[in-house]
Length: 232
Length: 232
Image (cartoon, rainbow over all chains, first blue to last red; front, side):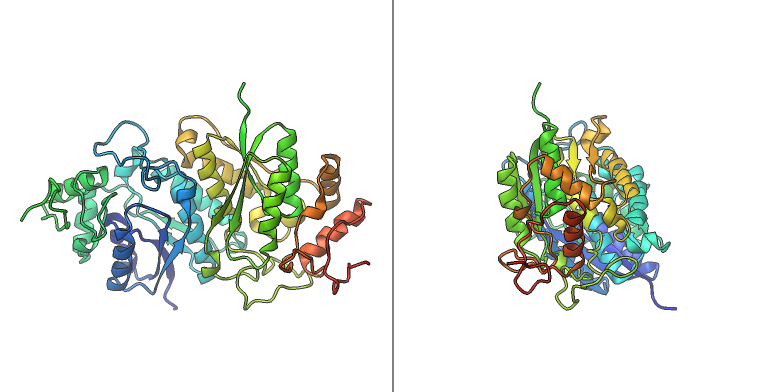
């Protein structure tokens, strides 16, 4: 039997890297997809490329797209400050329709590759704030994928896998460590510097650090010296 | 009451131009969106810009995106020839997941603009061949939009309008003529030359010419001299 192909959305952060390790462990030939969409935290793009190589991706692709021209998010609109404390409701780091756009492009590539499996790293922690991280969104996209495509119409169904959906950050970290993930390679910070050093202050950094702490695993993140997390 | 905003997907072809005229006639302030996705028929991008201006769009945006790097279609993969006769099943001019990708980006822009209406020009003629032109696809995307977004989650619902859905090409042409559309500005040809002259041979040209003929309207298309449709 031929090895099954999967498209894996890979941002270069902790979650998507864990998902790539899981998809590899399930035996998929993984085609990793990153987006250069005008995000502030470009160090994650370089991290994604290194991670794809280290974890044995069959191919890594970066699609350029000027989402910044749409505006509306602190992650692409440089006039909006990244908040350093989590607030109520949908955070301003939410990029409008981002996961819908990313999954759509993953779907297009999957169709060309004749892959029927798409993996993404949405999880329960994001659930509370980002509407496009919820299980009902993922299920709705799977339904759409099977109406939108030649393969779906012909009965060869797509599956959208969100294996972190019900895991806490600590459970994600533990799962990745068991699979041998080197988290020092990953960049989660919303405002990492050009060298990939994390600020230790933004919501993403705070969630990530709390995940390592809760998992009783030494945080391997490379922090900037001005970071509250930085240790010599 | 403030004027309602709508995002209109505008390719510069006959169908989407008619849709823009319809949305304007309904009183929407229209934000037109085109994509530079590595398509062969770049003359349509120039046509879209002129049409947006002529039909009084509030703003016209072009998003660049390298769909060509995904491959798989005669419209973006220059190694695949554009067929000159309609075949059976899904045509090879189908761009993988194109309408899903385009609607996703329209949704993102709509959310930023606080528009809740998105128009696109899919229709019954396309229905037979392109899976992402079918009514069930449009309905599924509307459902997804209301799960994927901050506004949808907060109960401020999006509507996806496909006013050409049940119209024949001739009915579309008649509707546009009634609204004063100048179809000589539009470019439908899959392989229009750099000046926007139509080949008269590809599936899109053949459907379009048949539409004008069935509507008993003189075809205002600018054909290349080598085209079978060309008249002096």
